[in-house]
Length: 372
Picture 1 (cartoon, rainbow, N blue to C red):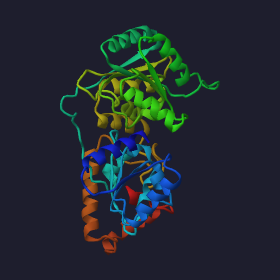
Picture 2: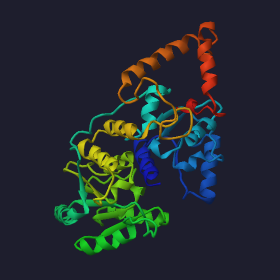
Picture 3: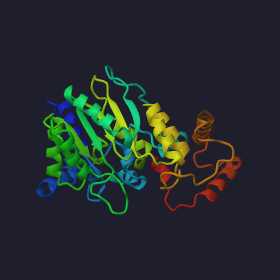
């Protein structure tokens, strides 16, 4: 919702003075306002709709949907993205965007029908974020560093994996963290945001941080996308071992949005597995989302390319390695595209063995590969 409202403001700004109606559809758009939006979409009055997963509901139908842009693609499931195809008699053009190519996406750039554009450089004036991994024993040093950044007028995020204390797992939580931060950093105001809060509360706390009234934002991963505060220079991620690489990379992207040097601090207990240490080492070594995704791919596998499984390796490649052999796989994909351009339905007798193999392997009732 936070991101949708930001996009709405940006698009309205772009279209100032133009007769193009733009509307918002999220969970908080209810009653008569919601009905008006749905009717405006059906009759074509609304030309651009900005929304959350609410847009995927069956009742949301368009007069003539031509383009669907799915931002923060990693927040949507395969079947959810497929729903956009049913919103028009002819499937719309689809653009999917993400700052972190998740393993599935990386694999689809090799196998799927995606034409890929890569933005691999920072906007002018931004510095690469420095990332550190610290154990609990270094917490006093981390707090001392935060005091210093606050004294220089900067703002700080502190992210926790849980909202409330859990009896089952020994992890830090937002509510305790909020009380703790208020006590330790009494020189500044502190905000708290998590998914269980009412939308109005959440918005009020977020706005206080965006406007600089509060200087520390204690949150769960609800702030993973869409929060843009150039003055925020420190991201502390508690129990960093509980987050996936893609998520850590997204959270890190909340800082480094201004001209000042920014820092991401990954906090863990000392007793973590060797695999976890490797994952966190990747974060400290690179800011490159593609390198992070390749490492993720090596650790987790690409998912089921024709199904809905998002990670793991359901089939064995007898020779190729998805990470190492990217250029070979890309060549194979190009060859397939050329073959299909000449014989789209594989009716040529010399291609009958391909048809037989496809039938043998296509066990799913739904062909998810059609939606990339």
